[in-house]
Image (cartoon, rainbow, N blue to C red; front, side):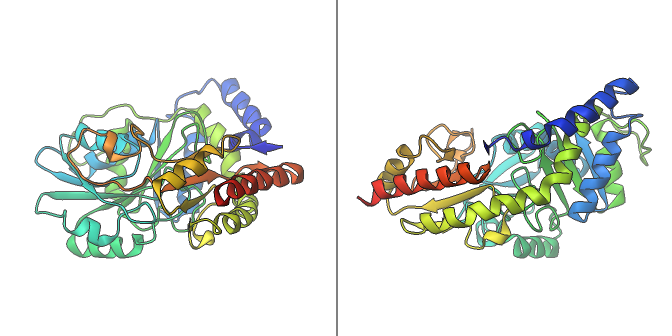
Length: 351
């Protein structure tokens, strides 16, 4: 067995909870029990006081920005690598996007962010990419806190990564199909400040929340069935991470023979990917071509994860020597087959 769609591991439990939700007839988040259960479980896991489940991670970011009073005339810094909807959420508020270059760990350092900060900066978004926590996140959080600028953590790819979601003023997670906790579509916004949490919940469409002043409320609510699909996966997450890391380690050892492996500290991630920087773009392309039987990702022209494909004016880039490989959940036989395939691809490059 080799699974890349990790949600299949808990399919039976998901079906059971979904049946229960359907039987109650309470399919919406208001009046249901699975959405608040999921919110409480995620908040407790990440160590935040409040979590609001929503229809998508993009909605969670946009609503959080609005709750922070980001709008026309404001600027928001986002990383040059991250899903395109980061910028879409910012521009939906009327604010302007500024793009921070990334370094060898695919995320910005504080220096990459600092020179973009202006009197109009109202938030900075940092993405924890490819399953591990951004290495400079603690410093970025401290420096922004000192300047009174909210940090929002993009944890869409970081379920189970230690510390992810605990540094910023707010954070958001994704439950989109290809995430470690997957419901098809969905997301959550997390924070500690009760006033901010109330504004987020109200703007997301919870009509039960009172606010000091009237505001327009949209509808970005997560339905009950999505929460029911997520709960068994959340219960399984620690075991999944442990299993993935056990295969990630030998894969990283193999890849270290041909390049610089990411993450350097495997315990800083959730085990879902192992990345490698090769010496040249040609070497990265050649190695990628030998990995047809594995799930790998290499930033290429037109990839919507890269700022080169966004409607922004920026010179950021330089990812053409990088690629990473997704770690499957496997039985013993499939584990050997995965590592053998990786060995053959490495030998082909070395030859």
